[in-house]
Length: 289
Ligand SMILES: C[S@@+](CC[C@H](N)C(=O)[O-])C[C@H]1O[C@@H](n2cnc3c(N)ncnc32)[C@H](O)[C@@H]1O
Image: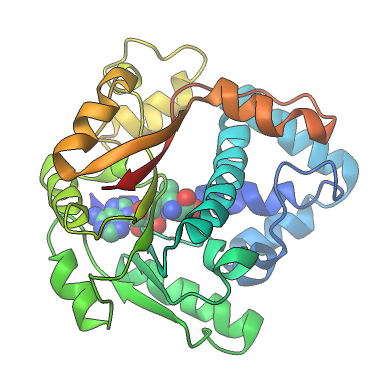
């Protein structure tokens, strides 16, 4: 399963890259770096669809096939970037991006520029990211450490420690669009690790609603449901009502729990565009006490 999950990093990266084809000010989210670090397939698509009519066509196609998914990919990145700033103001001194894929947060966020960061993912994605960073920046910045792991089968504490991460430092943990791919054991092991984070640490994570995974609320996302649930790529979900109680035993307290309607209301109007949003994947910002 992790082999298939590894391939999923290109989905958000592809949408974020295509979003850059909209003019600044009309974008949900600015990420110039993704255009430079993305693998050649994504860069080719961006080149191919760069004429305005092609860009609009591909956007409409996404909106028809997987309505609202474009917006949640971009809006949650905006939200997490906002929370990164908040976390730094609150005193975090390091960043650990769990299942970072091709996400560029630690490079693009002005608030995170001075902090040491660990980007953790499956070996194949770590290699792709490293190659992209070397191509775009000449090298992986010294303050960023790339870490290969399989959350379902390897020990996060040992692996991060072996890469120089100190557990006594208040840290911003990102766990974006990853929890759904893990087995129950992988989820439990990850949150047991997070339970050991020092007070003052922050966590931004997304989860898929259990009602979607169980096929009770699929709505217009039948294609997505077929691709990710029926093919057993997405395994883990939560009900919004149980999120706070899920986190509490691990010592994490919810600061913000934002659904798609709220994300859309925060970030879409400024673009001046009509963009759909979908409810399946809320985002949570929590504090370790
Ligand atoms: C949809 S991508 C999200 C990437 C990134 N967080 C983002 O939002 O742009 C899911 C990521 O989780 C990683 N992942 C899934 N299962 C994993 C596992 N068992 N161990 C390590 N990483 C895993 C994948 O390799 C992939 O990079």
